[in-house]
Length: 445
Ligand SMILES: [Zn+2]
Image (cartoon, rainbow, N blue to C red; front, top):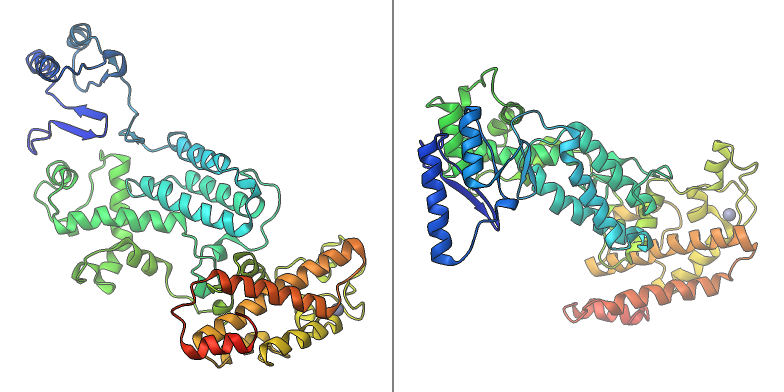
């Protein structure tokens, strides 16, 4: 097969694979080439770091080659460019180093001290780089995907790699796009299929790469890829790629990826696999560059009604009463804290003085949908709102321990200062005159 496509070697950085026919003459020629290379460059092959892999070679010839070359006999699987190379089914243990690398990244950065927003950024980066590298080469075993997701989930919610506390929002929601109420992380299994889909597409396209040429010689043998069925003795890796091809077949017709100007893209395939879900009306409130990331997170938890309010803790049987800590007049729920609480109403009244009365007094979600004003004005109002949610929760927690609350005026001042600091940290020289005037009129610049 190597002869048909002229494949003699594969090189990546300092990892080199040399291929040869399994007979004494070919091996002698190969070893002679090594010594010619050494004489010409002064570089020597380290026999201690090199291995010989055999297939269909007699034991006697194998021993001869090993003794002449000084190489050790290697065993499949081995790693090339960090990825496992083997013909058998990919097992969980073969991918454990992926999980180890993810864990080591997390530990290296001392990430336990990160805020939720910092941890989210790190998980995004790790999943994008490490996982995508593996996932674009082969279909990952389900077990390893589950471990990668569990590690990411534990780290995101607790800062460690072990499970210690239940997440407040299910992983499926976290992996949705921000417009659909998620945090925009990728679903590893679907992203894996979309990346492997690129290999499927290369075969459709007949791309001139070593791998596609090898597939043509070894598997297709002149047959059309669209009608191809793998033989029963095909390798596990190849059969999984074929399974992805079948799963994406409908997408090729409806998504017409092959007819797109830029051809197939894993991102468009991922969107197709995920399907379209309804947008949430509050996504602008949470996904807003004018927000402090920590405030965005609290806004996101509030929008999902997952803040551990006393009414929830009462349901779990953790506490015996659900009276609001701030006003003591009603049950503490997410809705009560932001709209009905007497104390918070006084805070909102004070904040409204800064914002010229743009804040909602009734239904926040309705306000999010129908808020008028320029894009910047809307964004600053959202930043103020999530800051309010954050500060309410801080006050509520403080009150639980110290049994005291700040005066509404003082809390308003804190909110004003935090939003102001965030606005000043942004590059505002490209803002329109009207927006700058508006910010000045609110005393936010
Ligand atoms: Zn209250």
